[in-house]
Length: 219
Image 1 (cartoon, rainbow, N blue to C red):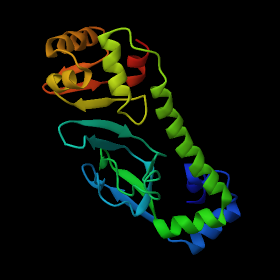
Image 2: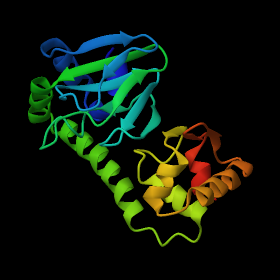
Image 3: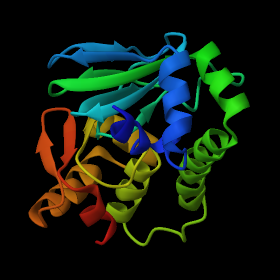
Image 4: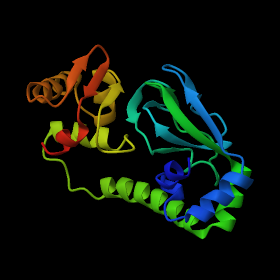
């Protein structure tokens, strides 16, 4: 257990003695999710921090009016809830569902606060994770203007994902995409079919699947 904890993002930089103290005096909840089990739901209060030890989750984020949604894969060593455990918004932004058998380490908010107070390196690790997420989102705002409708579609997708890599699924109709981009549905359809011909997306009924988002960004 000690070696495993030292590999997790928030525990990196701690000494073996530090981890021993944490294990002996702190409540750490280990659990296993079976495929299809839900870890937490969108808009539910966030009361615990969850770290994926191994396995994969699906994060599904729905729009405010629930008219469309984005699905992303969340892999091992990822942290769920760090961005909403404190602050003004303290509800989950997505619903997280296990795609495989997944082992989770959960730490409640009060315990997490105590660990942050006693171990400064854990604060620094948390800041590093959060600032990395913020920097990724900020870069999207300062990209140059798009040169084509295909590029505008890519920018729309990029602005609605948490990590610009891996498989993504957008459950959205072409008509609604057209409303967001101010374009005719037929032009949206043509641009998406061009992207599909290039092997960048797969089109399904009211859905756009991106097998590898990093390849889409290289277009």
